[in-house]
Length: 101
Image (cartoon, rainbow, N blue to C red; front, side, top):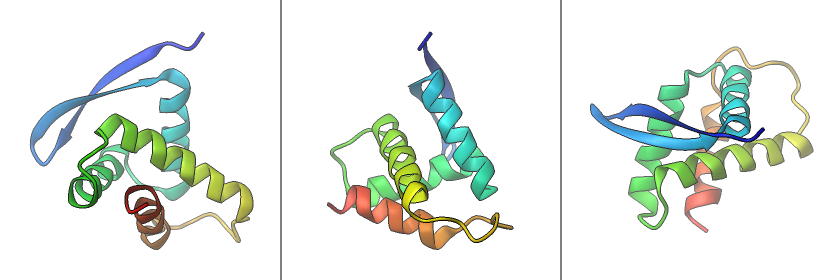
């Protein structure tokens, strides 16, 4: 069953919540495992970039769009090997694609 789950996150020492379905959280957590980045760090990057570039969408929407775009890119771009550290070039590229278009 698809059930919304609200989680409290800290963005620059301010608490806010993100409500995603269990499937969306699972996909986001899988993305974090692949990139070897902690969930809160990536959420902070999304929040910071979203705030700078686009005031129109909320953080929950930003996390959804990032996750969707990430896996879309993964589907067409085979990985040579598992990342040893976060691929920030790829992360920032996806952020630009989402929030600058």
